[in-house]
Image (cartoon, rainbow, N blue to C red; front, side, top):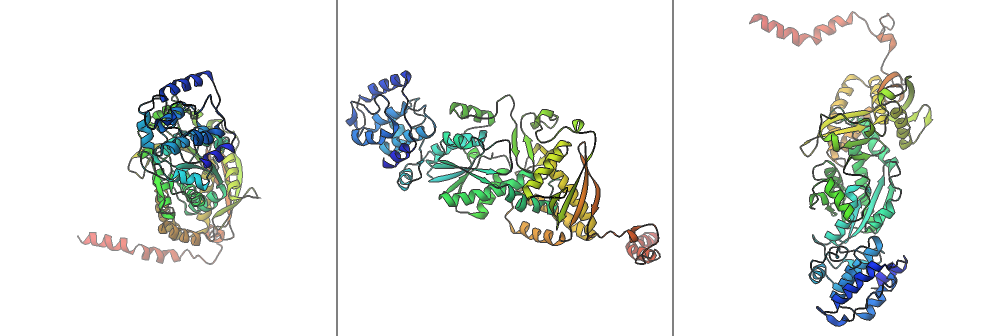
Length: 542
């Protein structure tokens, strides 16, 4: 109990008395006097009448209550959540020893939510507390410590208590800042701990996300099924990679995510986990629990007093990062429904965009954008600046029915304002600097590159090998592209490069360079058209 005492004393937690709680204890006191299993504590004075929580370990050591008496007492405090609830639950475990025994003692009591149904891990992280958590198993097995990909949204909010109940583990929540913005990390630590997590780890991954994941895809020209710019597909491996790092730092033996069993993200997360540390166990609650859909999850969260940012009247599944914002669910599940204008968050309606065009100059070095309108910007700042420009002009909206990697079709609406501008500008520079055959091979590989990234195979030799090709062929893609932004469109206005393969003196209709002699075209046509000529001659003989 020393570990519990240390953890509680450091937080100055206390049980607050109310008349309703006193009545509950009085009733419990009466039940406990019946003796039952280990009836040494028949007089029941465990928490009379709500002692400071820091005294709880001392009281337990002194009174040596029976398992039944203490479980009944703690069960009367099942309405407590967060760290205080975790304290009571761990104390129950130390007295009872095993969760199944606790369940047998308490039976079908409706007040045992925080005790009989939850196997809590320590929140102070001490060696003694960790040893205590290593004993009891959950409903589905025993894990020591799990790192959960946590957003504070609906799915991950209900996973925290579910993991503790089913795996008897400490839950370390992990949140990646990949540019989702909107104050999504504000208050997240308090919410995670209130849900039962021991801690929340937040990592700023924006620069790594853009530099090591977005820019390689941009250089490759990777677009899935001719429309999707891979916003979510690129974000998952950088998040999963950081989760593996955190798992190593905190000594976790498992990682968990809130991806559904129908989506692509489960594949992306788990293939990354597998590639970087195959020894980590992966827990995917949506493939295990009894919650059937988002509305069930909302009900579950409400029953467990977990605040959520959605209601049953309007449910959109959104994923936002620095590159894009995706929308799924609700009316979008029917491809016949047009998206509502109020759904869009990153872009203005093209009809409401400014009536005058705006020009933006983007400079590239070896296929990588480095400046916007002459300003040197970090990778993340550059994308953010173009998001502002593109969003203001209604650029980057995409409504598509796509083929998920798991076999089904899905409908998604994406907003990628800055990315749309960058993809168009990069392609214009390539057209200026690369020869025809290189462009043809690059375009063919871009399709495969996009498929691999979409399918979660970021950390695979094939993608890494294609990166080497892309890096080589874009060595000369250095220059500046001016884009014209106007009412939903991003069109090229000019492009310049010191490595331009365009020669005005050769391409001009006016005679100039002696490199190209028009008379040479006759011989070229005869040779190039030889297969066509032979085929025609064969038909004539027949």
